[in-house]
Length: 216
Image 1 (spheres, helix red, strand yellow):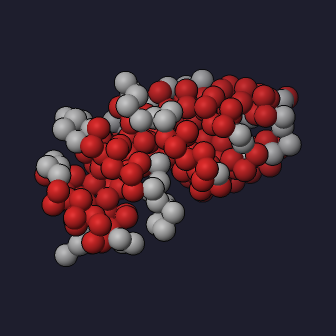
Image 2 (tube, rainbow, N blue to C red):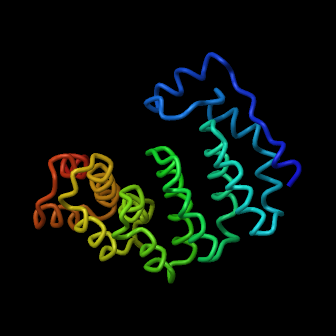
């Protein structure tokens, strides 16, 4: 833990403001772009694989509470690196961070962690889906829509439909964008189903536009 609690990123001053502006000035930045962050956190990530899971969760929390945005990215990187070690207990514990310092960058990065977990544990997919589905927090619901984003043959269409239809008329840009994104990705594999789904349901113009990108 000493190496982890003493972990510091070294940024470039001239990058701080542009990075903050890109994120609507919601967060301060150290000024470390992704390649440099990955390099600086390489040893930390390696060390995290050896931590007991309780200590790992404490480490994620410690990093997540730091002010600068890049530390949240490192925390999520640690989560993704260790996803093969997790059980549903750890996955459930990690959902709290989706609702902390929420913006599309962190939420979509967490989605990769949960999405990878359900690919590794398909029998637990509905259980994990249930952590996000119908949640009062719309960022959590965004993950229910995008949970299977990288799946093709294994995608559970019933869960995707449930998530989309629950938020079908929700007036929230990031929800409607997610609906379109999820359908667009799946249309690469099953365009006929996506066409049929769009035709059968009154989706927002934004969702339909996003979903139809590859449908011609």
